[in-house]
Image (tube, rainbow, N blue to C red; front, side, top):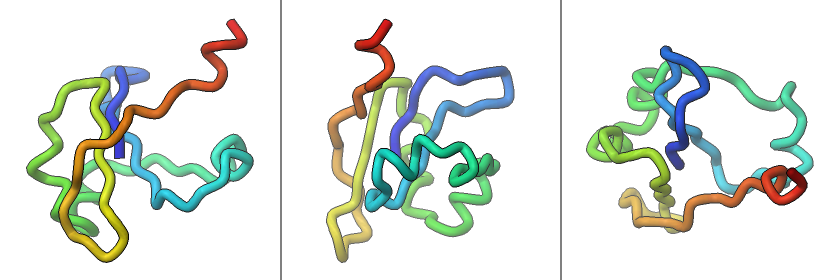
Length: 82
């Protein structure tokens, strides 16, 4: 999970992934969905303590763990093409 600047006033900036998606999968908008953060928190309450984290942060779970650890913020491959 990572938090970037929101796209609009109702966007929290949070982005959630399983971590197993290929870049090709993520690049296809048909594979992505918008959800209220509360919906995600109902599925995984372990995210709740992290929801007030600032923009530019990222967290991940180690396989088999319920605890999040700080992770590297994902780079934007499109930014370099500018």
